[in-house]
Image (cartoon, rainbow, N blue to C red; front, side, top):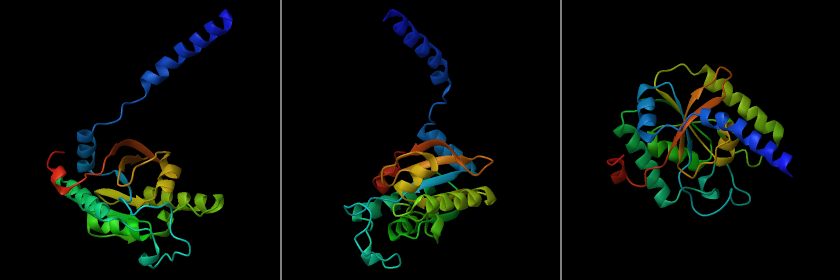
Length: 202
C-alpha cells in the first residue's frame, strides 16, 4: 500500500511542472487588443436559436423556413457582437459561414456581409470521411488566407469541437492564431454581449 502511495505522489509531483507551464488564457482586454492588430482567426458559434437540437425532419438547406433559426434574443445578440467588434476597432477581412441560415444570419447581423461555404456546414449528419474532408479544406483555406485584418468563421458546435476541441455556448467566440499546418491555436474566448448597451462596459 505504501509503495503505491509513494508512486502516486511521485507521479503528481512530476506533473506539477507541466501544469504550471500551461499558458494562462488571455483576458478579454488582451483578446480585443490582439484582434485590433489583425492576423487572427475569430471562430464564432451561431447566436441563440429557437429551442431544439439539429433541424426538423426533412429540412432543406436552401429553405430557412424548414430549419431551426435564430430566436429574437439571438438576433439581438448577433447585432451586439457586431457592435462590440466595431466598438473595439477590430478590422474584419473575410467572413465565412456555414450555409445553414442560423449561421448566415449571425454573420450578416454582426458583420454586415457573409460568404457561405460548404466546408463550414454542420458535421452533425456527416460520416468520418466527410468530416475529414471538411476539416482538410478549412485548414487549407485558413493557411492560404493572406489578407490584412481578421478572418471570421461562423459555424456550429460540432464543427468547432472537431476543429479545436472547444465547446462553446451559442454566440461565444474563440480567438486563435494559425499554425504552419493550418490548424488553430486558441488564444482565448470571448462571450457574446447580451445587448448593444452591454458593449459600452466591455
